[in-house]
Length: 407
Length: 136
Image (cartoon, rainbow over all chains, first blue to last red; front, side, top):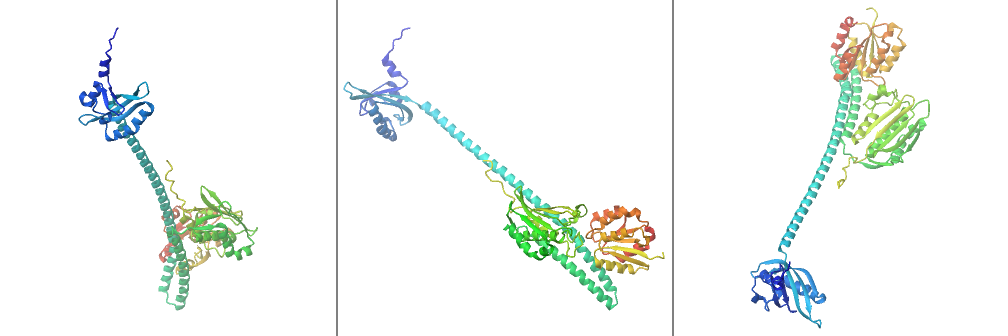
């Protein structure tokens, strides 16, 4: 095959515009495609327009400061993007490539440039950019939604924990109420029924001496009733005071204070008291309660010591599951828990014949411990000894999980 | 009945012991009372006198809420020795408890003839002594 290539035709119909300009920018020749791009007639351009006349103000500045400089320095410029302004003022994006043409002496005679119309490419680029922005926005939204979901699940978890806590509190209250029913039934009804019986006798009696005797009985019952009521008021006060202030308390300090209070009894009984609080030397706890708990347990251990051996009492702290446990062990009389376990912590229940036994100490101790959210357990064997294990619970033992746990 | 009726009162409440004794005293009956301040003391007495029929109470008024050994624990111990006692003993539980659980438990317990809620009325006591034969 033989082709007759018409270079003039090729020059004019090439898909890109060509133009030739003087070093000052004046266009001295162009192909037809270039004129088509610009919409000018040949005579309106050649020797009249400079390339910069087709550029915006910003384009002109860029041309002067970057394009011309680079061309001057390296003799070639490739793929510079401009907005090309047509005769009617509309514009489209172009890429310009230029080369300097020099004479034999190396002087710059003119510049040859090609102009590519990149409208399609720009449009595509723009679309890509928009798509990219959209996908970014979408992904941001997803991240946001994800965060919202995580926050939501975090909130639900917190609410669940909160509900569990409320539930626990309600259960405690319920227990306290049933305790109270038991107390009302046994500890209040009994003296009141005594008063009723005495009152009936008193009203029937015609004998002054008999009436005076009955009156002394009234006094005994009323004293007993007053005492029981005071104990009840004390216990209710503790139970109402759920938000009692927690102090920083040192177990050693509380123990030595308690031992001072019990000094006489310790000396008299020769009891040996040892302690090891190294695992948890201190705690956030209402100081008054801790003092009362230790005082009650310690005086119980001394009071119910075995006559057959020297009383040994050991106090220690342990940390289990972040909770501080106080353990008080003695080698005393012990108690048959099968028989008495269910009554051990009840008001006015006693299990040993001892003049100081009133059945108040363990009742109060349990209420104090449970009000703070702890629990008390007992192990005992007759003639071996007793161990009380008290889970005291720390202040704010209910902690929200860290908020950013899942991030 | 020519021999006096032997009445055991097991209750840690001394005022109640006094009022119950006073109510019993109104009933036209020859009687003797034995008083125990807790179940264990009563149980010790029964164990010591198990073979002496005349020393075993005919009627026991038993409190359920007492130190050392309460009413229910006394019943458990009594059950164990019951076959060795050559006498029918009527046990009445007298309690300040209005808890239906206590009342139901008393009804189910063979050793307990009846359950009275404190304060014990003259009518309650009359009911016991009027119908003594019925219980036996």
